[in-house]
Length: 593
Image (cartoon, one colour):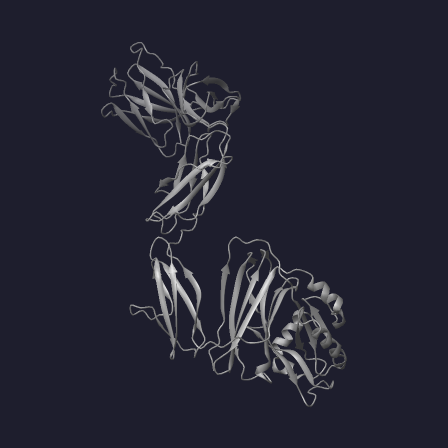
């Protein structure tokens, strides 16, 4: 007994064009050896089938009703499966290319009409007996000529072309039965084809079965193949191979898959062998005797397969494969003159190449090599759509598949890194980083809690705000003007103007410095350079309602700096710090975070 196998592999042809093929019509009849109407209908049906052998392929399934049927008993599972698939409840019945209800629906007119409908599939069949004739091997190639997305199944049906009895096996008196379904390979569910079946893609199924039982005469075997849409049940194409090919005397080596190495030695060759005795040894040279090969470099590899005294040799060539395209490609940080491209790491890549171009242009920039997972394109034009590309590159310089991404630059860029400096009781300097293509900037500011913003402008990246009110928290924001287009405003930030010094009779020009402001828990007081505090210097903390919330006495200065550690019970908010030292007395607001 031979080892029976099931093999599926895919071939995709490039440069596919829309094509059609001549349709061969499949007629599936449902009958029963104890059905009297079947016996009456079958002679005319056989005459019709014999008159259309170039147009029609018939299959006969046998049901369990209305009475005994030897063909149903021989393969009840698969006969019943097809009956259930088509919801058959009575016989005789028929489906022509998967549709119809009654046997009489199949006539010369309907055959001619269906035969005239072009098919977008081809089905190619070949089969052969084993050397000692106890098994058959079948190869079916299902090919689509146009890309289709559907739930498709490829079926292989083994039929017995004629079975003759001297005594009727059922009760309807029939003695001669034709095109009897004996087996569906690899099963009644067939072979699931790709959900998206691309134009000129070929799915090849190789399978087989023992034929020592289940047939009246194995010399009358035929093989039918067809493609069926499981959603609509429409049969899209059929083929018939009535005769076997010559049984090979040598083993046949079939390439299941070949993967070219990418960057490193990661190529592979996967083979299957049929024919001869079914017991094989493998010789790749160099003492390698495995069936398949892995971890291969670029090169040519030959294998000799031996089965008894028969051999076959095949050579395979591996070339440099390309890295697949980078994934998770996005752009961010888009301004009016720049865009940052990011992507995920690609295993095996030594570095990456990026390029860009305006979408309206056909010319890409020169490749830019980078070793990071991002690149910032600069010098771009505002309000312009760009195409960006990235590809992984092997150490040997082989460039992988390219991923492209599109993004449009903004018309104007938001200012960044806004900050305040040189803050006095009545003035402050606001600075920021320039945006691309800017002509000027607008600064808006107001005392926190106000409802009306004051406006200032600048053609540089700074602005001195004057005539401010002491001891106030100010909010500010900046936006860019590009021609007549404004950006949105930057995030609102704050600064605090210190209090004007409360002058005493002995000191008229001393100002204390508090930092950081705002602060979290520790505040530092810097002693004015021209003033030496007495040992009884103290700090009193008032909230915005004027309540005394904390006092610090006998302040200690180290190199002119005094650290004030606020109690944890003092909640975040605005406070007034009052410093006293002898006749010196001054106040300044702070913000506790």
